[in-house]
Image (cartoon, rainbow, N blue to C red; front, side, top):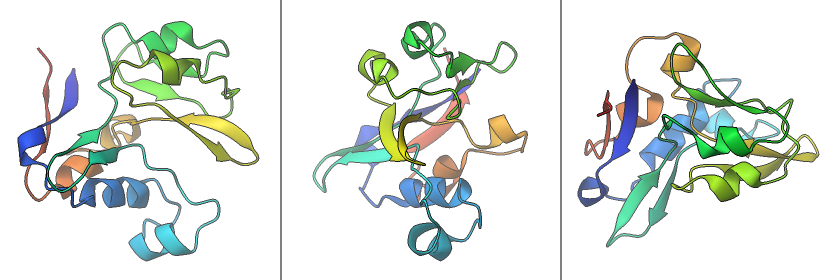
Length: 152
């Protein structure tokens, strides 16, 4: 299975991965509308932590044995048996935060949406939607600090 890996030494904290993610998951697919006009605003599934001196993109690694899926009490977190992609279903999520606390990479975030707390995480964009190419965050990274490669 292909996974996204972050190369900390190459990240320049530009946050283009966040912008690309938010735009990709927006209804309009337009950057301005995604950030300024859509309500509720789409959530980032990747985020940059750190600062100018040291930063890194945090995203789901789609683990072989994901603790978030094992611990999910509502069945909202699942792993596709064919693609291996770990998916969060907002309609099933009860906002218990178990997945967030179990993720060893800090890749699951709980945010309020539609009046309830919901888990958000990377869904590998193109893989889930059956589109060719790299996920939006990888394609947008100017320094190639995010790579999409076969896992070891």
